[in-house]
Length: 394
Image (cartoon, rainbow, N blue to C red; front, side, top):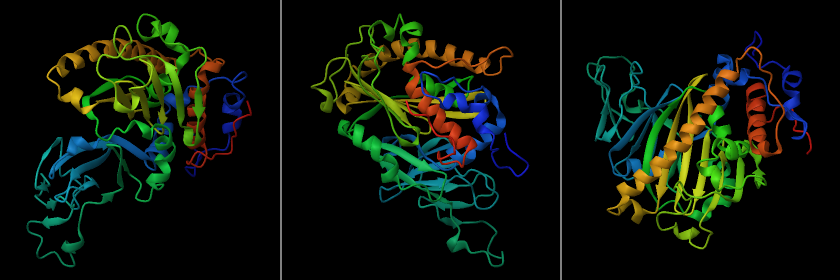
């Protein structure tokens, strides 16, 4: 992929030019973007290393001292609630040897490095370092965990590994304009889990906006009542895809709502649905009674973890019968996701299949194509999505 200087080669056009043709003429790209380890290394640098990344809900660290430690493409991150109630994010690396000062989640007054005992407060400041008083020119007062940008939108938490990312208000503006009406701040997390898949992280993002497969793969589940012949795709800058109102329904056997709708959606049809992509790795789905958010994270070029977050109106989560609601949701969700997982893992295998040549695109893949082309431009261009290749006019 790269030349000897480490820069992306300039031969993108002949290799991917067919993907940039109008949708009625375009082909899918070659499989290297899904199986080449060098592509993933480039993505870690120019995508995950630069963008705002949604990592969960603020309610997961609701109280002073609450914390959650995790890794973003191998980078250790620590999210916590400070004593004054502020959300803060740090690089989870002790300033001595780099060991992670916290793991898992919980509540604490301070973070202690488990290797040599260096101690940090909730503000990330060093407050204790055993046997370091005689270390010459050691600036204890200014030693701290590196601060990472951290913002929230309606209860969703975003961090960036980039110390100077795009202003968050600018990053979230189009999504806020389109979906801010839902008011997800008072909603509550009812389901949260991790699902490991044997495929490249991009394939699951693409799958969720691929309406071409609904009537075939999901014919016995959501495909029974979804209309997918005229998908109202809205493609936006930065590879984002918004899918305006369509007929889908909740994750129930009938597709009808099974709990009281979200306040902002009470006047909507019972199978009202919206969906889309917030780049780089978030899919979201709006239903009358809940909002689903999936984030896809690479483990390596052919393995990923998908995080599933489902938020409901607070009174639904607090109700005594919520365990029944949750069980009903998961039964249907697992059936649908099981269908998808089998296919994306097969797609991953196809990316290296000797005799497979990627075929033509369908007009129902307009959103998928928009997302793919944005990623190609980032991987092989200058990293910000403004590469030299332009999308042909439709």
